[in-house]
Amino acid sequence: MPRPGEPQPVFEGTFFGPNVVVEGNVTGSEPVLIEGTVKGTIRLTGDLRVGTKARIEAKVHAKNVMVEGKLTGDVTADDRVELVAGCTVDGNIKAPKIIVAEGARFRGSVDMGSAKPTLHDAASVLKKG
Image 1 (cartoon, rainbow, N blue to C red):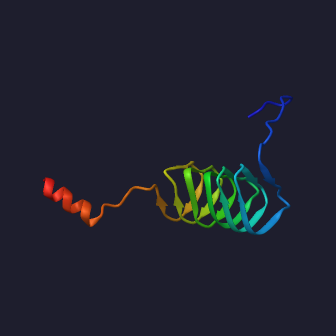
Image 2 (cartoon, helix red, strand yellow; image 1 turned 60 degrees about the vertical axis):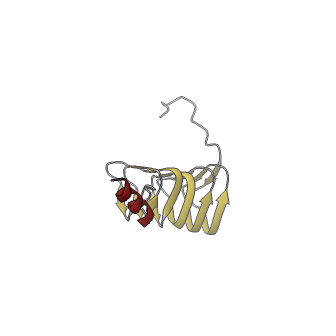
Image 3 (cartoon, rainbow, N blue to C red; image 1 turned 90 degrees about the vertical axis):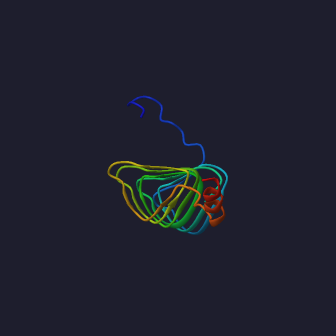
């Protein structure tokens, strides 16, 4: 975090401010920071950051998802989902890496992509044994 008097980091991507309301689909390939309200679906090939003032009611898919605000809906990430202290997520999460900070509120299921053994796999293990 920058100290007072130092230049503030510039967000490179699309920013939805706290007074913006989107109802529908948000799609794109660049990083997105949302501080407003989105109802619908969010599908990104880049990163998504749900800011502290954000209120999201959507099915979400992005490369990486960081939640600082309130998100209701299922979240899927290609790489990682991070729930920051003070956030609230009500929905299922699917990602290879999931980070839940102390103080984050989460209700739903977690799928980290572990393959479930099939009947064929079980039979091959029994034959080897």
